[in-house]
Length: 129
Image (cartoon, rainbow, N blue to C red; front, side, top):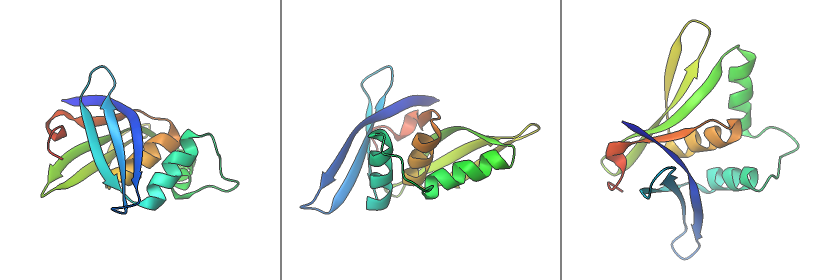
């Protein structure tokens, strides 16, 4: 079962050189911390602060391309965790089919925020971090 989540916090730890995004269950208290790259964290942070770039960033570009092809992003899902690595999927629909694309969680979250679509996490990934 997938649980809808929202961005709770962004943590930038300069001492350990790690960036962590914390997702929180929308209708509950479960949290999911995920270590992500500096580029993705900056893109997410900039978007959340309403600082729109003059030109599209990579995550904006992906949304623009998908839209230009007549498709739309429906949701992103943190779908699994294997060997201490999270996996994600981006769910795209066209008029006649649904497509699921494998993605890094950091990219999926950044795309989800850039395109304003819901973010979900599979129930079994909570507590596995």
